Length: 207
Image (cartoon, rainbow, N blue to C red; front, side):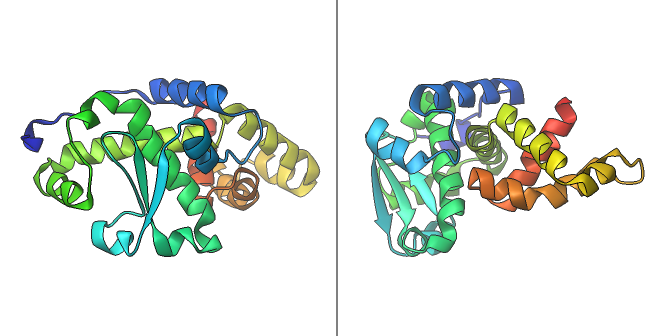
C-alpha cells in the first residue's frame, strides 16, 4: 500500500478520554494501577511476544500487529522490573492504536518487524506523529483516571499541610506543584513521573 496517503483521524482530547474511560470500564475495575498486561492477555486474548533488542531494531519497546493478534515487546525490558511502569504505558499505547486506529491499522498489514520498517520508512512523519500523540493520550487517560487522580491529589494536599500552603500561595505556580506531586502520583498509578505530571497538568487545565 501507499503509506504516504495515510491520514490520521482528527480526535479531540475529550473524545480520546471518553474512549479510554469506556475501555477501562469494560475491561477493568476501579483499582489502580491498571494492569494492562493482564487485560491484553486474559481479556483481549492477544499474545505478548518478547523480541530480543526490539528497542534497538525499531526504536520502540512495544509494537502491535495489524491483525491484532500479537503485541511484541523488547525482551530485555520485559525481563527487567525497572521498566515495569514504562512497559505498562507502552502496552496501553499499543492498545490505544487498537481502539483509536483499528480500521486504518488494518490496512498497514504489519505482521512482522520488516513490515514495521517499511511503514516507518514510507509514512509521512507528520501523520505518524499524530498517530503516536493520540495513542499516548489514550494511554495516559487509561492508566490515570482523572476523577481518581483528583481524589488522590486532594488526599495528598490534606495529609501534607505544608503542601496545602504551597498550593494556596500565589507565589507558586501550579506546574511547580504538579512537579512536586508527580512522584507520589506515579507510585499510586504505576506510571512514570513524566506521565503523572502530564496528567496533573491536564486536570489543572480542566479545573
